[in-house]
Amino acid sequence: MSSLDSTLGAMELGGIFSTLLFGITTVQTFNYYRDYPRDAVILRTVVGGRPTLFELVHTVLVWHGIYSMTVTFYGQPEHLADPPPTLALTLVSEIIIVAVVQIYFINRIRLVSKKWFLPALCLILTLLRFGACVAMLAVVLINANLFILSERFRWLMCTSLGSGTAVDVLVTAALCYYLWQARASQFRK
Image (cartoon, rainbow, N blue to C red; front, side):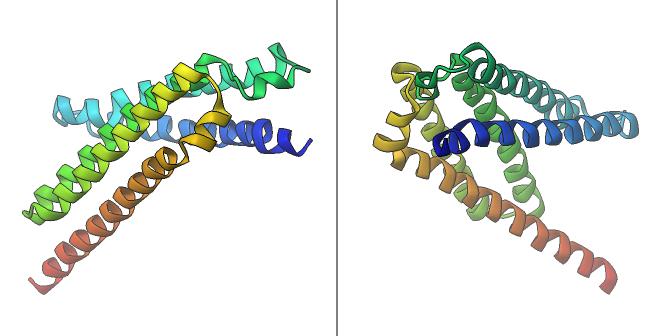
């Protein structure tokens, strides 16, 4: 029973929170399009359109996977190790969403700071994460077994999660610093 808690339970909780965040993102996207209709098309696409579309695909794939494992394959615990392909495909939408969003904010840091070192470091880490995620996707599609991924390719998972976390922390800290610096310089004037 504890294996069900750590597999299906975790997947269901993740699906619930993911859907909640998707709803919040959808409302924010609606507000963005309503409040800023004159923004450049590329900005409107990167900020609103593409990520929301990919998040919708991601949410549908997650819930299809959860439905398959809890309803279609009910009472068949062997399917816990071999989930439906839709769960592997969630990686595709996740890879695209994260790469686009991180590159967008890395570019914002480059524009605000007028420096190259930190954006270059973040871009290298983003590309490392992208490569690790693509490799994980290949492993899951070839082997279709989550236990193989979590046991033999743990280093790949750690590389992906670690580099992604590092980029998120660096981007957040840099944006906070540069926005604080810009605000402080405005008060001095």
